[in-house]
Structure formats: C-alpha cells, structure tokens
Length: 335
Image (cartoon, rainbow, N blue to C red; front, top):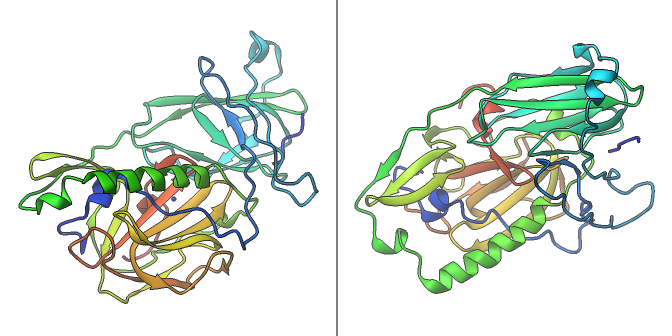
C-alpha cells in the first residue's frame, strides 16, 4: 500500500512548570490543516484509534492516512533485507530529540511501537523521542518492493537538573478552581490542535533562535516550587526585555494567536509541517495573524510578561504531535 503522506524566568510562572496550555484552535477564517490522523504506529497491546475522515477528498488535501499494521509473524525473516542506507537520519537519537528521516523507496508499512509519523511522497518523515524515552527502540520498515529494514535506535539518556524556586506567592503555586477549569478547557483545545498536521516540510531547514539572550530555564527540568512538586518545565526560557522581537525559528503557518490564555498569557503557535509546531507564550501582542505564511527570521510577536510570570522572558516550546521535544537540540549558533 502506498503511503502519502513544538524566566527572565529566574523565578517562573506556574504555566512553565505545569506544562500549561500552548494556545487555542486556529481561527476559522484560515485554511485549516488536515485533521485526518497521521500514519500511526502504536504498541501492539494498544488499540489503534478510529480513523478520522479527512476534511476533503480532493487531491490537494493533506496526505492520506493509514492505520498501523501489525507485523506478520516471521515476515522479517522470510523477506529480503533492505540495505540500511535506505533509511537516512540527520542525527543520533536522544531523549527530547527530533530526527529528520528519509526513505529511499516507497513505504508499504511500518512497525514502530509508540510512535506516529507522516510520510511524504518523497519519503521524508520525522521521529520524536520523548523526555523519558527508553534506552532502545526498534523500527521495522517494509518497502513496496518487499524488502524489510530493521533499525534499533540507541537513545541517549539525559539527566535533568532540578530547578528549585522558593519564596513564591501562594497563588503562583496553587491554582484556584476557576483557573483550573479554564486550564482544562484550554488543554482540550490544544489536544485538538495537536491532532492536525499539514504537508509542509519547513523542518528541513536548520532552526534559529527566536530571540537571543541568556537561557534561564531548560527543557525537561523538574520544578520544586516552595518545596512542592511543580511538574516539568517543557520549554526553553530566554531572558530578554519586554518588546524584544520574536522571530520564526523556521518557516511555517501561524495556526493561532490568542491573548490572555490561562497561565500562558498571549500565545502564538507556528505549524512547521507534519505535526511539528513551535509555541511562544507570555507574549506582548502579535506581529502575525492566524493563516499567515511566515519565513524564517520574520518577526511574529513581541516578548512580554503576560500570564503568570514575574519576569520578562520568552518561553519557547516545541511539539511533535503530543510529544514535547527540546528546542535547544534543533538550533545552531549563539544564543
């Protein structure tokens, strides 16, 4: 079967620690990305989700999606082995990392427990490893010509330093009930956004820093707020003054820009394609609107202190569908 196919935080805000919402649904006036499920592979013991119909059956619709197919017993032993060079990767696997992958040949099926991907007509796709990815993960690829390729990823394990912040006001640590309700509603909207994807391949270009300044908090750090569990910090905090331009780290489409989200404040998300997004929170207004196609380096917003924060900074987060990844692993150059 042919598959076609994101503080001045010296003291930080609750949204940073608790993985608060990164935005809201795209404005209905913009052309929506596909809501069809991507080519998805899940552990055999987990039932695959029911496919969602694509918004359009026209040729211009997003890549056709296919359900996971469990590997046939003994199929890898009986099938001819593919040359390992038919799968190329741009880097090694690491917790919180993203790999750019490319297939030499058309894909028939893939078995990759716990992962999902969108494979383009040219064979390009992304692989994300979460913060707690195990030491080894195996992918099995069957090409249209019947050849089978197996690749075991040795995932580099990381140590994340605990960030302890004391003497915070109580309301920055404990959320009241109205805020919790609003936060839950915002997270549900975000979940819907993460299921959407486009055919863009902006991830092919090297990413740049959206703002340059001192990194005050990093991806994956456990937080202790006033001695209590504050969750995990999922972004990279860059200490810069209010009004500093926020530039697109890669090309893409602005899929939403909304003010006054609970905890996150003014929030903007850029879709880089195939399920990869960048999220910017605590902003002070926007320089781009939903539906805008942006180029790398283009100003899309300004740094602010909105939401729950006690210092001006940019909090940059990246997602590959539901997997939170480390933006620092994708950028090059001075901060």
